[in-house]
Length: 254
Image (tube, rainbow, N blue to C red; front, top):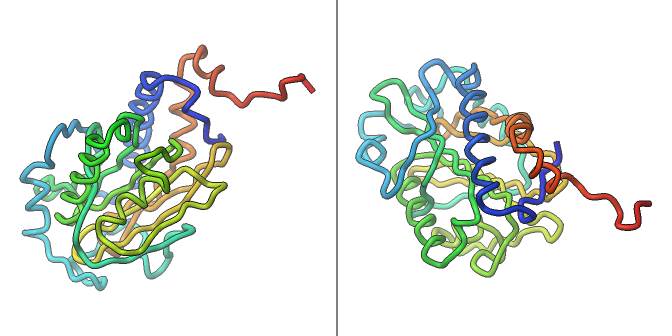
């Protein structure tokens, strides 16, 4: 199913879809995509990420080179199958991204948070304060070693002229990111911890959503079925709003 132009409808309609999409992603991840020791839950994180996130890595060995502490049986090893995205970036530790209504991935050992999925809404970029709050929480998560998958189906605005990844990455690197003019929407997977990594796939309205990596450790990820979950969520959108979002034919009917 092609990506729809969500600027055609109000924020409330997207919020309704956003909620359902999170549930469909949770269902897919818990239905065999995540390794047995991991699980996904939709959680409300209003402010701050909580002590379980900030102490997440304290009791878990992390080698960063594929040793025992980095293994997640059932996931995909980066060295075996690197994520297939258009852009990849690396940077030394030092900041970004956060949460609101979020899909949280936890490890059964202590129920520790290891990853989050964030679907941006218009409210995340509605003001300088809102965008800054998002970036601050992101920084907190990544510094704590939490991995992130960020999905932004809204075009750039005055506060993020090159998209959400450019805003996030500018907090940790001097590298300037420029969105391809024909792909103004952003899908980005981030590896948290000491050596930050970003896997970025620009997309556009009308594209089919690709699977994106959701990292469980710095070296292991699961492919997240964005298109299949998006399609199921869209089927639950009220017909009145589906009609607004479906592609429109030529104005002259030809």
